[in-house]
Image (cartoon, rainbow, N blue to C red; front, side, top):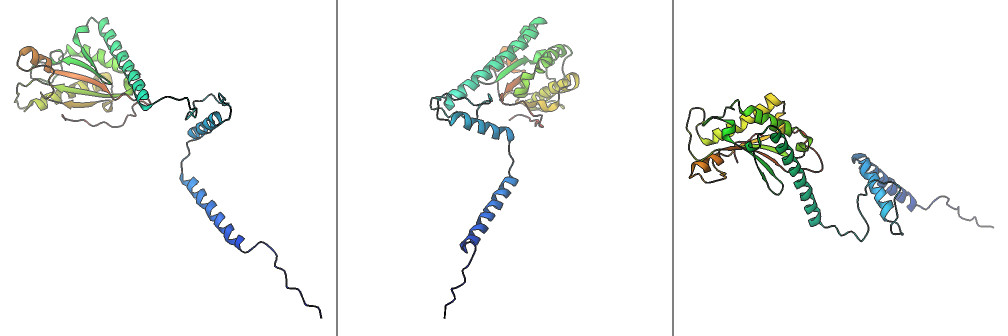
Length: 262
């Protein structure tokens, strides 16, 4: 009597079921990751172009797009962080020198060059006005004669280059104490003087308040000695300071705090 051959099992091996489940779960996992992520289309395209332009076998290969590459894969690239920082500082100094030149040019047209002093440091431009140009002694109320000076200065500040940096108005006094009902100390006086300039820019020249930070330093940052009348006169001043130039973007209009001293 012939033996019946055992029934042959069809289909894939049993381990394939577990493997298929694992692959499906992995696919779901990566789909979720992709769904949660934010893709910068321009950055992604730039990365792809960089890969196409610099991962080829032939040196000097050229990508189809002329867009700047995200990275340079050529071994000849000798750029270092130090040289990049130096180049950035050089560009910032050029911008600040251009701003200084434009201010001087506007004041030359009015024959008022002597009203201003400038200090240009590594990445900061200071524009200095003596208090006698703006105020009467022991006062923070702007003199009528100061309106023309501040108007010329403010119109220059509307140049788009000024949007690249932070803008500060600092009030300073000498060390002669003041004690009045309105200004109990030089701290209040120096801050009030910076505030009066900001108020003029806002009310008369239509500047937004968030373009500026104001600060009062009393007599804590003298430019000269307080032992002579000439030195004290130099210390009584208002400074307009442009700093922290951002070469990548303009100011975003975020609300800026107002401070009294540091």
